[in-house]
Image (spheres, rainbow, N blue to C red):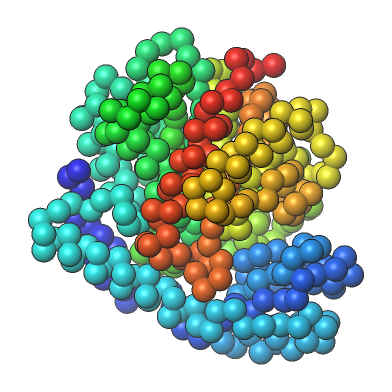
Amino acid sequence: MKLAACLLLALLGTALGYKSYSGYQVLKTKVLTNEDVNKLTPFLERPEFDFWITPRVGRSAEIMASRENVVILRNNLKRLNLEPQLLIEDVGVTIEKERAEIAQIRAQEKKEGRAPNLSTFLTFEEILAYIDEVSAAFPDIVTVTDIGTSTQGRPLRVIKLSNGPGKNAIWFDSVLHAREWIGPPTALFAINELTENLANGNNQALLNANDWYFLLVANPDGYAYTWSDDRLWRKTRSQTGGLCTGTDPNRNFDQFWNEDQNSNTCSETYPGANAFSEPEAKAIADFLLANPSITAYVSIHSYGKYILYPWGHTTELPPTVAELDRVAQEANAAIESVNGNSYTVGTAANVLYFAYGTSHDWAYAKANVPISYTIELPGGGLAGFNPPASLIAPTNAECWAAYQVFAANLPASRP
């Protein structure tokens, strides 16, 4: 695979402008009760505190703060009897380790005359180059379409895998949230299995049965920014007209949009001035509406090990909950069979948090895509949103097992 050799520019050429997280720490609370969650909820919209794991009954919250604010955070958590523990001593150190690891891998590849491969994280440009090369190598299978452009003009490039007409399809998108780097490798692995590894009879059967769509980078401006400026950037890079830049594209879909009335442009979950203000979200919605053969939708996120289905805005269950849960449980069983990991399965509001204007709720309710999920991949611990490259291979393996289950359960049509 011949990819553009641009990573060192991303790692080194912009190093002077790269946001430092030196001294930032992540604190973990005790397992929370309902009373604890109520105590902690007012802190969610304070921009100096970045909730990596939001408050939820029966689990711990994980919160990042700068060197200056971590003392305030710790004191508040102690005051509320939430028993703060140090989870990550220095976020900056973990980011520098990640960058050094990627640079070392690239240096070894260059020394051996190899192009960057799928065993490490790829820049946006390298992902586009990979798409071009797969398209050239497998012209009878691969179709490439730009379904729109980002705010800054980057292509929203979709790769379709198909070996014949008249089939239903499954859709995958990743890095709607820019910092969630572990997502694209799992989609790249799936593409590789369905092109390079078709000698595997099971992979051939999967391609024979269904079409596959992949939007590998759903938030290209934000993703590029995580490489050039700020590793932990989450949102888009659009101008909001407020104090802060960017909108959360996974709160920008027109399904119970902004029901929580969040007008804080500095919030990590700021939903935008209006539904579909972000061209990235609008392009996904338009494409799903224009392609009714897509009967399964999967949005790849991290971190936390969840398989989530509608709804996010209410704890009420969707009308087809039995089927959504059956397929999700089957996917989780497939994951467990690979590495022993188990994902929590359920509606987003019931097992994770309330979320309004999300892509999987919109796909299910407005596009009538009957099988609609968000999968939250591993991370956390000392890794958080920047897991080591060594986590890519095991995550790819377990996700591929789950993706096959989703594809095997495609409904015949939309309602």
